[in-house]
Each structure stands twice: as C-alpha cells, then as structure tokens.
Length: 162
Image (cartoon, rainbow, N blue to C red):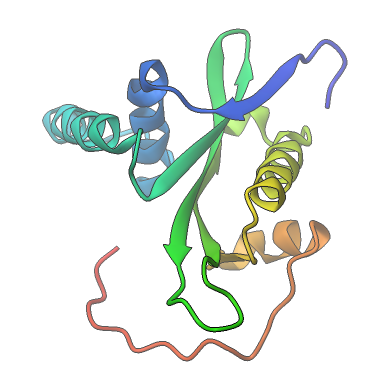
C-alpha cells in the first residue's frame, strides 16, 4: 500500500449497504461513465432493500476495505451448506463473488489485503474452501493469493443471465 494509506478490513454492517450498492453498480457496469440515472437509482434502492433484509441471517457475508470512512473495495462470500454425511455433519464452503476495488485504489495491495482478511475469517468460521469464478484478467490476482485451477466442478448452465 502507498505511504499514508490507512486501510481497515471488516465485515460490512447495515450502515454500509448504500455504498455496497454503489460498488456493485460500478462492478456490473464496468465503471461506465455514462448510464441511465433512473436505472441506477432503482438498482441502488432495490439492492439496499434486499441486502439490508438479509444481512443478519442471509447467505452472504460482505467484507469491505475502508479508507478515510469510505468503502473502497468489497468481497462477498456466499455460504453453501453441504448435505450432512456420516463423516461431516456440518460442513460448508464459500462462493467468493462481488469482488471489486474502486479504480483509484487499484494496484495498492488493497484487494490482496481484503482477500487475506476474508480467507482468515473463512478459516476461523470452518469453511472447507473458497471458490471463485474470476474474470480472465483477474486469474493472476487469485493465483498469487493461493487459488488453484481444478478440473472440477462440472457445470450445467440453466440461464445465461448475469
């Protein structure tokens, strides 16, 4: 990180949801400078409603990197509960998604630090593994952090949306 950067990594709280919505919009629009403001407003409101309602007991935990009281990066982990077996009654793994860093904060090690915080949390929460479906340009980032490519899983696409 650059000199002077003070970054905090933490789980998001309900007061963070509007900023999370903004980051999700930016990720999904690839930081487009031009967009339909009404669509953005509608998305922010709906995202805020859904995520706020699910923050306590929902399937996702949202991790953030914060600089100067602003959220500059996010990573979300979906908890996937495995079917109990005689060898493991309560096992689960994590689906890492919604990984985004504001353009002005990229290349400073913030994503790496956030991913390390998420991985440590997942370890403490007894997650079996974290899986991510990265974009082509982000494979090196995840591989530098210890992710490996495996032949599994087999995937049947049911719907090609998002």
